[in-house]
Length: 93
Image 1 (cartoon, rainbow, N blue to C red):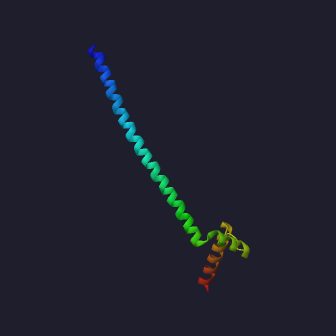
Image 2: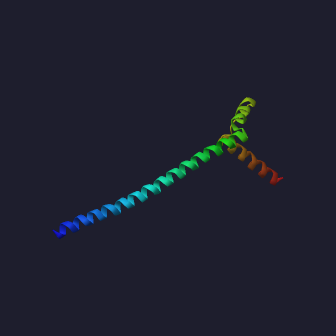
Image 3: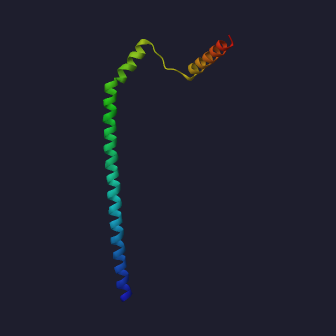
């Protein structure tokens, strides 16, 4: 009989300790979740403000209208070859 009561006591004690741990972990995770949610909201607001100040979308439309094109890796490589050839011919003279 003593062992049955002792076993029930330890089961209840273990259950209480585990419940306490689970509640602490849940509180910690929920605080992190709301913190990251606030950071995400702040980041989106800041991104929106920066884009409105720089007016990036209008700048892209202007560039497309004026015929600007993106630089490709081939363009950069060709420019690099042009510079190295120009520098080597300038040094030999």
